[in-house]
Image (cartoon, rainbow over all chains, first blue to last red; front, side, top):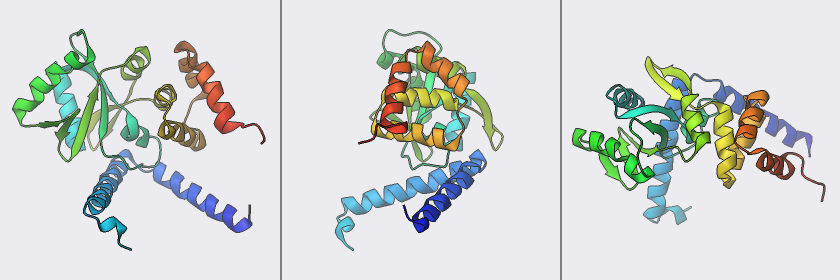
Length: 53
Length: 174
């Protein structure tokens, strides 16, 4: 594994740890945003927009 | 989601449910980074025992639907979220409810399954996303190994845990 890739993986791990350490109320707010995003993506797919790039 | 938490407490106070615990992805988010999910899993002990899981959820529907909450399939919509009420499938889930961790979100009391029970339930269910969640728990270092061992041992999950370890933690070299 290249050093650059190791750096990227470490950076991702650190960011995940930072998110995990947030207060639960803040994580709930993030869940709400993630859900809205997932629903938007699903709606786009159902409308055939998912094939547009 | 806070409206869901407040409603759960009200249902408990009104005797509709006995105890409850948040599980699934929302429960895991208490310990881990948030993961995208479309629903909330609430494990509930009913106040009165019933003959079947389906029948046991009747009082929940009888309570919520007249209040204007809408059901869709196995979900009841509370606020913006579809909520699935789940009676315990066995002793592991029952224990996960009774030993849930008590916390609060902006002043609203809440019961969340322990990380160890969430991991044990994920192991028992055994889908790809459940294994992924167990790996997240391990990587994050939130699991108490003595507590997890105790749960796995009492619920006869040690063979599955060893299998999981061989597959994901110490795979044999190709």
